[in-house]
Amino acid sequence: MAEVEETLKRIQSHKGVIGTVVVNAEGIPIRTTLDNSTTVQYAGLLHQLTMKAKSTVRDIDPQNDLTFLRIRSKKHEIMVAPGNLAFHFLVKLSFCFTR
Image (spheres, rainbow, N blue to C red):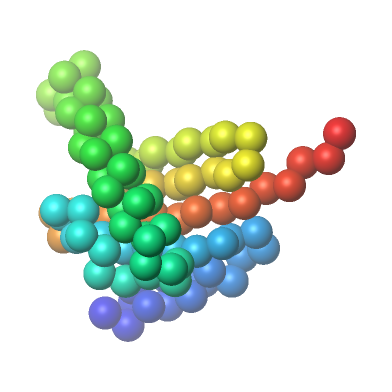
């Protein structure tokens, strides 16, 4: 578990990182640096999206698997790194673009 803590601290220390969430295989948050309502919202929605993406990758090639999912919007970037059956790491990053 110390290795997980070190990884989360390293991710959280990067410039622009708003928060991290770790969920179990059912999408239930088990560790977060975000407030409760934001954690529940992101964990639930991203768990569903990640499961659908994993299924799609497997449908295309049954011997392949999803290793990383990156979502960018105008305000934020969300990176999902599915782990083994026990964990998924979710990272929410914020970017400010000036034009």
